[in-house]
Image 1 (tube, one colour):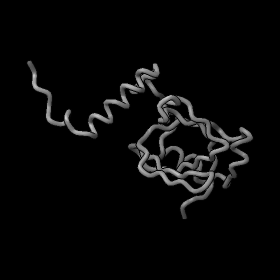
Image 2 (cartoon, helix red, strand yellow; image 1 turned 180 degrees about the horizontal axis):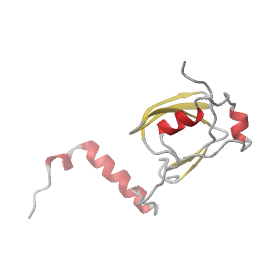
Image 3 (cartoon, one colour; image 1 turned 90 degrees about the horizontal axis):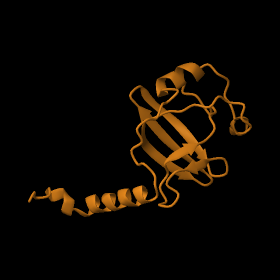
Image 4 (cartoon, helix red, strand yellow; image 1 turned 120 degrees about the vertical axis):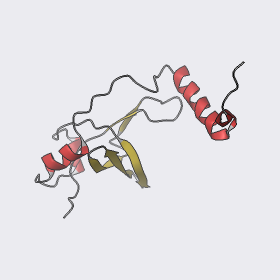
Length: 128
C-alpha cells in the first residue's frame, strides 16, 4: 500500500480537493484543454497606447473590439458597483474593470466560483 504524502492531511489541500470535486460534479472541466487568447498584455498596450481614451458606455454599446486574454489575476479590488483587477501574463500587466451591471459571469455558478468573465474593453486612463 502506498503512503499518501503529508500534505494530503493539511486543511488547505482538503478544502481545494473538495472544491475541485464540487466543480467536477457540476459537469465543468476545471482545467480546460484549450483556451486561445486573441491578445497579450503587451499587444493591448501597443495597439491602444495612442488610442483616444474611451468610456464604459462605448464598450457597453458594443462599439469596442472584443479581446480574449489569459493570465494570472494578481490583484483584485472592489469599489461599490465596480471592481478593478490586474491581469498579468508573460508579456506584462494590464488593469481590467468589472461593472456589476455590465459583467456576465458564466461557469461555476453552482459552486459560487467564476470560470469565465465576459466584459467590455475600453481605455479608461493611460500611463504617462
